[in-house]
Length: 323
Image 1 (cartoon, rainbow, N blue to C red):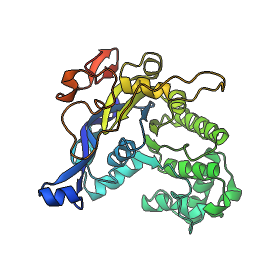
Image 2: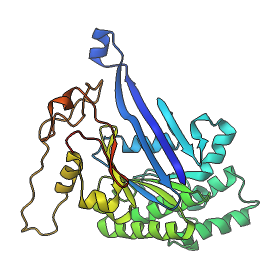
Image 3: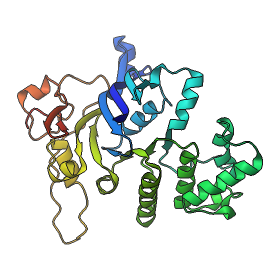
Image 4: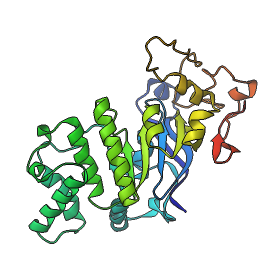
């Protein structure tokens, strides 16, 4: 059974100050996310990967209702998130939490760790007094590898990895079922990245958490994900089990991402990228495949017709005509 189901989700940002829109008297839109479908099962990690600017973080903010979608459905255990009013939405916050990319800006520098982790407990009435709240904050810190000596410190007193541990503890404070991790290790050193990834895996096993893990680093996605969705210019172009996506990628964009991964041997010859040309302007996109201007395998129909995500095997979906 799916914990989260997303159907036809879109976010189109109007471009009101653009010169072309003023002289043509047409309203222009940037389609950051355009009719995507995905699902996540309880205890599963879905990796969402793609270039910067492809719509990954916008998807995260739509699912958590930090921004409102243009259209689509978001179901959490068959409950429509988008129809929830203020009080019901507050309850949803306990079920779905987010860990942001930058540990330096996601924590309030004027608040202590006790205040940062204690605030969600106050808002949702999960503790009865200050002693109980402090004990819960210490418990949360212990979960992420920190201790009681860190409770009264400020964010500037921690390293980047420690700050991200605090951000993870804040996400855990309300005992959610789904955590959206928006590039949680991209701002950290490689050795620290491994520590945070292992921490997330340990917490998932202990609390049966589901993750939507967003990254642009394929090695990170391969390490942590059960399934992978590949995103390009607001669309999911390939989705499947991690082993399938990494061993037998079908979409030209997915194969290009694999070839862009640096090789650990400096003497090894780097494979040439297969994508050439300019990225299509994301404002008022023309009909057809969004990769058409860069794809080495394009056909005539790719310019006029947009491919849809079609099943090509057991749980393997690809949006490409030339498969």
